[in-house]
Amino acid sequence: MLDGRRIVLGVSGGIAAYKAIDVCRRLVDRGAHVVPVMTKGALRFVGEATFSALASERVHTELFGDPDPIPHTKLGQSADLIVVVPATARVIGSYAAGISSDLLTATLLATEAPVVVCPAMHTEMWEHPAVQDNLATLARRGVHIVAPEAGRLAGGDVGKGRLADPETIVEACETALGATRDLTGLSVVVTAGGTREPLDPVRFLGNRSSGKQGYALAAEAAARGAKVTLITTVDRPAPPAATVVRVETAAQMDDAVREAAPGADIVVMAAAVADFRPAEVAASKLKKRDGVPEITLVPTVDILEGVGSRKPPGQTVVGFAAETDQVRQNALSKLVAKGADLIVANDVTAPGAGFEHDTNQVVILDADGTEHEVPLADKRAIARAVFTAVLDRRKPS
Image (cartoon, rainbow, N blue to C red; front, side, top):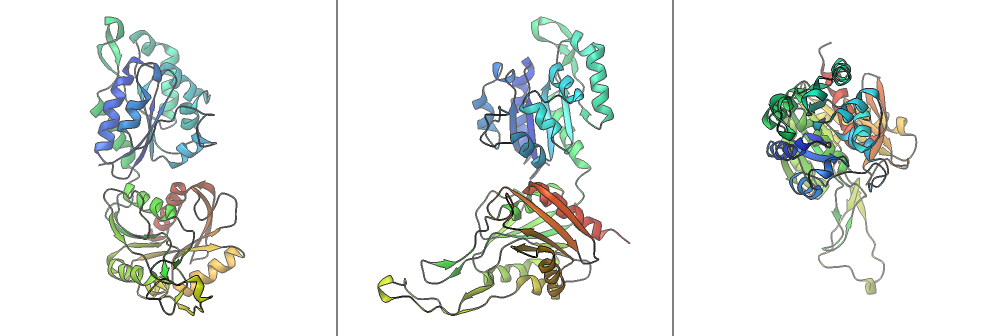
């Protein structure tokens, strides 16, 4: 299955573009999150609305006209896999030569994810030495090539060059992703979002956490084969296979973590939990006419500290530290005080990082003294780096 996998489906301008519709449907049916990217040539064969309706997101077509200022970077960094169906001789040649002439080729050059290329063209084009040399170059670089089949071609000819069967293509995607399912057999608990501490039936004390990083961590864990429990205060699309537990306050999150964490191999505390809550909650709405209320705050339960103190043998605990100054120092103090194995620290005042953004930049600190800096990247890329650090720590010494 492809549960939680984020797959960029590139569609280029060949008559076989209509078969990419079936590939899209099959990938979605297997649980993948499919993001279609179409070239101008593809739009001559298949309508944009078709893929927007069947895929998980709208179609992307423009390198410069997309709402995102750098769509190829975002698509490339966030993808678990890119598959090109069909791959024309032009796209294959541009990719092999490193030429980014459109959004699809730019995305191919801006990713570290596995790439599956599915050529389809007339027999003479398929057999041309330049095409074969380009494919050999891509294969040497680790690109997965799904060779075309012999059969009826455009114009009534019969020969080699017909796009591979859609099911064969989907199976190739699963094979390409199989090597990265390195969390298979492990249980992962992730917390996400900011807690809300009620002042009265209407108002609450909260923070700006959107939950995007926590959800990216849950999606990454699921995509790499883990059994995921997501404890969250926000309502966002979660991996289909994840168990979702919805909470609101720090106390509710603590209860949920106490229940889920003991049996987990990895606990990732990405939620922004309130440090304080009102000592008393007003039974009715506080009125402005009654004057400024005196609100006494008391500490909330320290969930990460509790997880660290109760940690069973073999469990890896990851904390998060959202800081505004002295990031490393404050994060290291938190790492030691809470009994965590790793802490992910970030400066929430840095441009493009922290709360509400789609991107982040962090430093991952290990209790053994090692650290790993992750520059500004999509939050899914941050999630990949976090679990890679977790697995490095869990390797037998």
